[in-house]
Amino acid sequence: MKIITLEEHYTDKRIMDWNNQFAKKQEPASPEQAEAMKFMMAHAFPGDELLDFDKRLAFMDENKIDMQVLSLTSPVSDLVPAQEAVEICRLANDITKQHMDEHPDRFAGFATLPMADPKAAAGELERCVKELGFCGVLLAGRYKGRFYNEEEFFPIFEKAAELDVPVYFHPAGIPMEVQEAYYMSDAYSFIVGAELASAGFGWHVEVGIQIVRLILSGIFDRLPNLKFISGHWGETIPAFLERMDSILTREITGLKKQISEYYKEHVYLTPSGILSNDQLEYLAKLMGADHILYAVDYPYVKPDHIYEFLAGSHLTEEQKELIAHGNAERLLHLV
Ligand code: CA
Image (cartoon, rainbow, N blue to C red; front, side):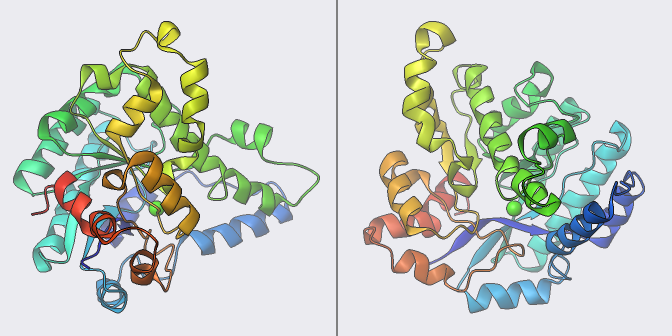
């Protein structure tokens, strides 16, 4: 069984240095917060594995991963001015392309786009797909607190639909006000709150909402060929589809279809390294095995049973092949 994984991150010193010039130094407000920030930084940057492609290839070989779709680990910061964001993204995409060229049978690429300038972003996506041979785009979080259903971002989705490449939605940091109001508490430690607000839950809910907002904006009526990929088994949304259909009816949304119909037709899910059999079986049933793809989230998540998880699941051989590689090959035009 061939394995293609889709949410596999890397970085490059040139991009880190450029981005860091614009980084805002966040001073901790208390020793507890300083301790938590230290812990989370250590957790967020897994040694040199984001940079080291020999280690990456060894990991892929050990785990029988034939191909990774590479993406830059963190998006270009919102603090970078638009013109420089355009230049950094161009460099990042050129670096991704170099990795693809060095190992054409092992790496494919998702584009990184300058969200500060959506029209330029659409142009860069076109360059990435048509000239560099990329197979889609990965967007992280929001841009300056704005969700991507706002009209200014439409050119990016229009371009993705035109090029017939999917948009992968990835989590990123959430606003401090949301963190404070929803996740922090005196009843548990700062670090518990901070982890709950981020990779433990908060980031994921935000990505889930991002996709629902795009559906509600009518984007799939305007762009019937547009396809999304949502990691972490759909970022909490699949369990709520029936509820949303019953509350957010077509009568009040004014859309052509129910939310679940758009979701099941246009959204594809990956595990992002959450290798849960319950989720796999439930979502293969709910969405259809043709809407599930594989993702490890290397190097943040490194399960030791990537191949065995799928191979040993209760799905049919045909379903396993689709999830392991067939859907990726079809959706990302990899063959
Ligand atoms: Ca990730």
